Amino acid sequence: MDADLLKTFLAVIRQGSFVGAAEQVGRTQSAVSQQIQRLEGLVGGPLLVRTSRAIRLTVAGERFVEYAQRLVDLADEAKRAVHGLAVQRTLRVGIVEDLAGFALAEILRRLHDEAPSLQLEIHSASTRELLPLLGFRYDVVIGMKPLASRGGVELSRLSLCWLGEWQGGPVPLALHPDGCGMRQAAIQALDAAGIDWRAAIVADGILPNIAIVRAGLAVTVLADALCPADLPRSQGLPALQPLSLRLFAHEEADRQATETLGRIISETLGAAVC
Image (cartoon, rainbow, N blue to C red; front, side):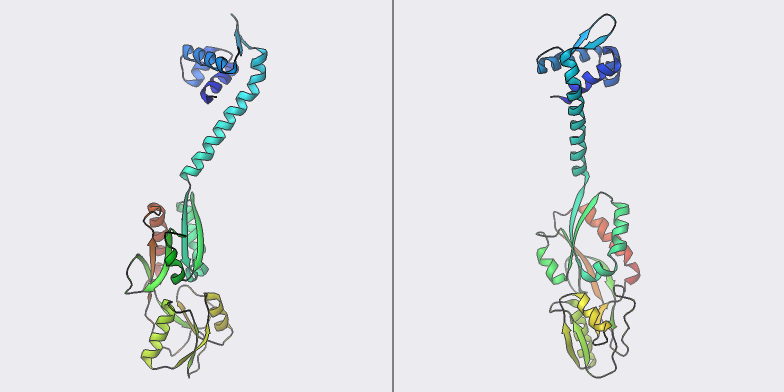
């Protein structure tokens, strides 16, 4: 049934007259009368009886009132539900573990303040794992790449640091798998300085590398602004080339949400820009 007809019927009952109902629903008195006639035609019988003094419900009208109110309430609820889905935006984000582990809380807080209706689906992994899934599993990927890399939008240039105790001799490295920018930066810096090194562990994830460094068994490389403050900084090791934190967006990604996310990440890591 047309919700407008039901609302007019309920307005007539509440106001006790067609004139009052017309004012409430914003229609003429004749239009209200026509709507009641249409509704009575739909239900198959009279709902109201008009007398010289008042309007009263028929037996059918008395039975119909509760249903009319429930139908109006359900129609309003349905509109609210559809409206909520229409305004809610979802962004599927793949993000490097370093950023997810040590800066994501502040990023999410600021993003919620600016875009409270934006819903995020977040998964963290390495850049080499995330990028192939751009456009399939992710709308946006936030990854780390060498400075000379192409593609995406640079959000920040992150300085790298050595973490862990090193007393000389071959450097025991806690390495990321092949293809990781931090692994490449560490090996290139040591080789260029003529410092021997050995792989103490190769871990597919940041947490095992942090654990072995914390245990005093290896040295690793992490972004200076995205690492635990309690880990000791290594002394005597060569300078490292920074990495570019970049945003890669699929062409169908929500542009406004993507730009907002990128700006907030860039602002949050502003102090980490080299």
